Image (spheres, helix red, strand yellow):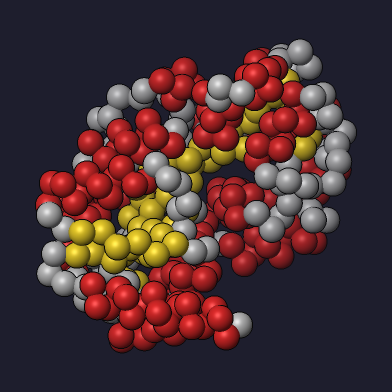
Length: 337
């Protein structure tokens, strides 16, 4: 514990010493090496140096709170709207005040008070075994609680924020009582106890341990692009299905960011967020990490183009955070471990 406190102190001291008019300090829970290209391009275009501190979302939120008014943090980047909502509730963000961001980012993909914005889209689709499932059998998430899927579903645990946000969106669209009934039916259809991450679920479907799963789309995209023979074999056994609007649409989550509450480089922080909302940066999100761009004007490259367009469930992502506590309680009552 003492070592961790010393580390936090030294890294904060480093950032405070580095902070200046031509720098921006990023606290990010996105652990993707590909994001380096975004930082490098921003620096090349603006001359503003990016200083990066990484950690989990909860760690970064707590760190900013502990640092208080002396925090060097300018921008907080994280994944899942539920985590962005938590950051706002923890009072570690402030409104960005950028008309550019309000114009570029769709209203359903940003905080209505301007505390955070979505930067890329993550669709939680249904992956199925091609030999075991006819895609014409599939409808939407709601159908997965039907008896016909008993013993055929693999999925991550209820501790996973992606599943929590899916349930939170269903609460918003269908109500808590109906969603709990759905969750009980879904649990009854599990082929095994929840375990592992999204990639593990895809592998299980390919291996025939279950017929379908619900995962974020980019996990399958990575397997499809992998040079590893085993990954390629897994990808060849499965396909992705996005529920159409007639069955409620696809659940769309985000990766996003906000301005830290005591940002010492506010102007640079806003410029950085505005850069991430350009077509150039959006294409990097898409090509480097297979995330769908938040801007409709960006053409889908590679695997994303193969997945094709999807119809969103049109739920404002803010509700993923607001309904998160209810979603967790509901999943627990339903026996989703």
